[in-house]
Image (cartoon, rainbow, N blue to C red; front, side, top):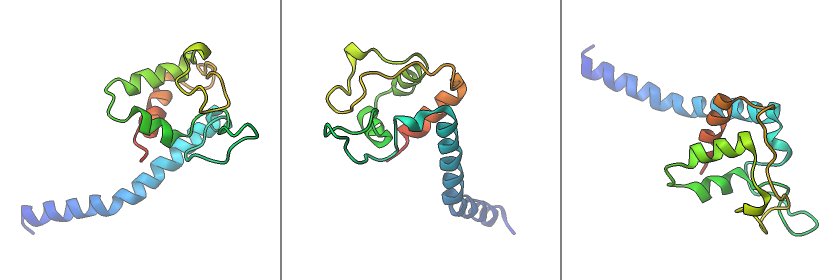
Length: 125
């Protein structure tokens, strides 16, 4: 087998394995999110409205990904928010979710895990 055929075969194998790898990554991130308590307030997709007509406590992660799409500092900014929490007086989700602020989560998730989870969230389409 020549090197061109081997390269083509390798590329094909990687492309064919991508959906399986993505599903594994999704499972790992959902397990991390559940272990860290994130799913108490957040969901991946926008869900049902609460009695006040607003989504549950925090924004859906696809909405977060859409809001921060193309922002170079999004990963750092959101990782800081996950770890330190957010200011209820400066909430950019005010009127869109029923929660006023995100509490600090430094005790529930490590910084490396928070960075990884935020990166995964920002990649959601």
